[in-house]
Length: 187
Ligand code: B4P
Image 1: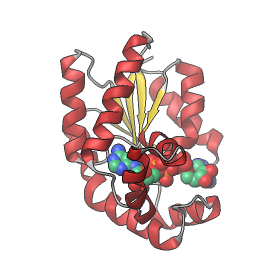
Image 2 (image 1 turned 90 degrees about the horizontal axis):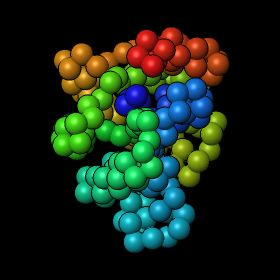
Image 3 (image 1 turned 30 degrees about the vertical axis):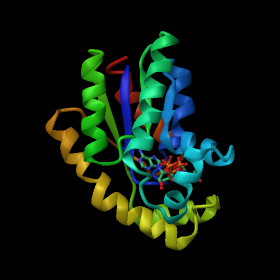
């Protein structure tokens, strides 16, 4: 199973990945987590990415693409049974690059799960979480960047016939149930 989790920052993608991995046995490639690990280890890549993350802007394309190529290579070496992308792709250029990478290995996406949550709920959730980039100014910028760059992917994947919407509000378990109902169809 090869899926992408799409949604605004704070829409709850990262929260649902463990349950999906457990049920369907597919590992996650989460660009946000990979970037935070680079920042924590103070690598050169982390130092380059940090100012963008602190401001809530997208990290430059070549940094993120290198991480995805690496991630896919590792999954291939581990003979993984598919994957779930969390936080990638984030704009049209990333989506087209992913299509090309997957075409090359003849493993197209099966489905894109879009988490529907309204912005006021998101701001409340992220302020409550309190990560370094969860202050109000950065959150508002992340939502602006999402609206401008990531939201067009809803249309992109709808046209490809891959998009499935999931209501992203309610309890974490209730959302997990909705996700299972969609993924069981292709499992
Ligand atoms: P991410 O790490 O991807 O963003 P996130 O805010 O953690 O989103 P997510 O949707 O996973 O939210 P979560 O489940 O944690 O990105 C961070 C930064 O990295 C970006 O701003 C950017 O700079 C950079 N970046 C990452 N990928 C990139 C890329 N491809 N290209 C360029 N730059 C990139 O949920 C959020 C909160 O809501 C949590 O506190 C959770 O407990 C809570 N929550 C979840 N579900 C809930 C529910 N049902 N009810 C109530 N609260 C809930």
